Length: 456
Image 1 (cartoon, rainbow, N blue to C red):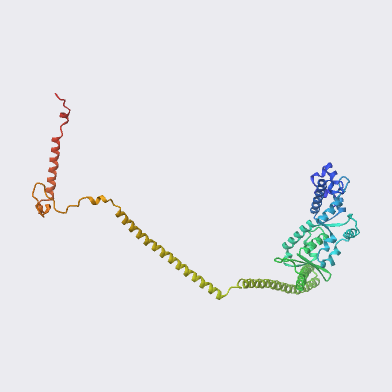
Image 2: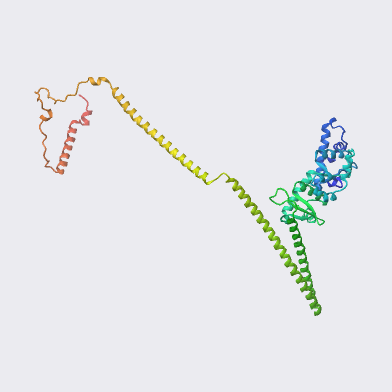
């Protein structure tokens, strides 16, 4: 933070009346005017965090803030109070305290990377002084957590994602777009160490960083296997660089041989060509070693995959054993028998219910017969008072009766013989009858003239 023009300042920065109030010092007693006190505190706290975020920094000091927020040759008078309040609220933390809260394994290299200046704040606090040193550096917790998440995401998207262990130099190059400098990177690594996402150790004077791999909740300590893989990967990288360098050197020798031939210096061309063959031989030897190392790394990766598969199988077997803990063949057979018994019981219940319905129908038939008898008994009694129907033969009035003889039997028998007449004759006789009927109707019906003649 160099000056106010480099930071994104609020719109009210040009309001002289408002800024005169903001640049004034805080009242020693907050209870005198809590509204103004809190308003000023919220303004500067938010502005400090925003200014650090815009610059990509995770640390801040009072000296830098006075330079950043300088306005019209004036610096805010209450920034020390703001820093103290933010520290009490946990929004910022001294670098020494921030490092001390991490595992002790960090301190043998982490404290060396941190500035010694924060220790002055620790000593002054122990001596009872409440003054904030202008050069004391504080870590903005919100920003360092954001940077830690960004760095972890950058690592997982990079080509190093398959490598759990990286050197500190490789990590510096990888985090160049996330952390502004090495000090910011150290703060971010401290935060990741606190979150159990990375672990840092020192091997042969070299700092190495191990990241938590996908599928793991926290990072495991650096093991001998990790160091062996790291050494192989380093050897692979060095051999690859040497092979590439020898290839360029061989190409250079060939160009020199061609140049000597064009100039007619055959002996020099042969010498250059021999040098090219020696370089190519060395390159082939190194390339064979490189392929061997790559083969070993491939086998290690395959073994790790096999280990993951075995762990998955083991977890599956454990889960299956747990799920089948109370399941046996005898218990299954017992359950099947119980189900069969219940089914038989249900069939018997259904049969019983069906027979009950049938008996109900029979009772209904009996009730219908009884109802019919009641209807017969309810017929009117006057019907029985009528005289009985005579059963003797009918007698013709005025003639002596034929005792014991039926009237019908006294009638002459109906003659029966076949008609000697054809169908044509019957049709002709029918026509004559029709014409006769028409003539008879004409005689009975008076003419219209006679009907209309007036009487004289």
